[in-house]
Image (tube, rainbow, N blue to C red; front, side, top):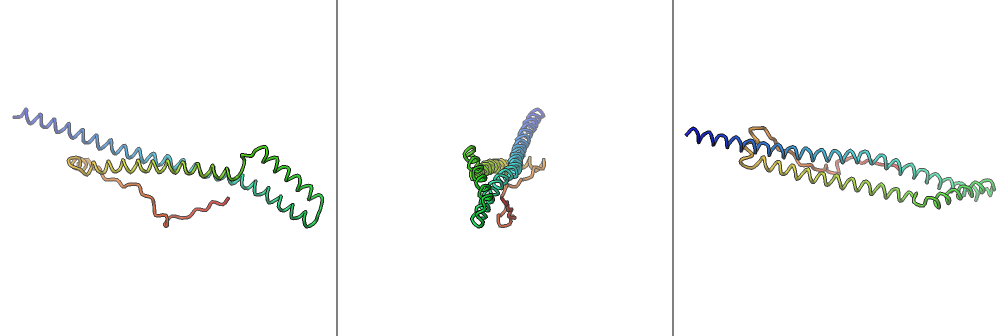
Length: 178
């Protein structure tokens, strides 16, 4: 009789250990998934200012060059001053040389690169959020079903919330001036 009770007790302890380890593994998995979200968020936060600044600087240069040419052209049309005409000619030659030597340096391409990089990062972040929600759902389901719910209560495993995006109407607009 004591032998049978001992075997049942040992079996019960082994089952409890296996169930506890399963819950711990599921919890660690969703925590790792949360860490993945943090990594992609940090990547996005690091990427955006760098890319925006790069595009901003190039767009500023291009804007200044075009504004200078436009202003010089207007001045020349008003005054017909040959020194302004010469300066306008030099600026145009510099612009043409720049475009001929570096045709890939166009603001539109820079903006496209910015957009592509941001879309790629957002897609990775969205995938990380999906993985997190799957892991949280698996964990929450496991701690809710019998007999795991008993072990979860004993060892104080608590349900975790899914990752949800805030309502965009409540989010502040962030304007980036280029």
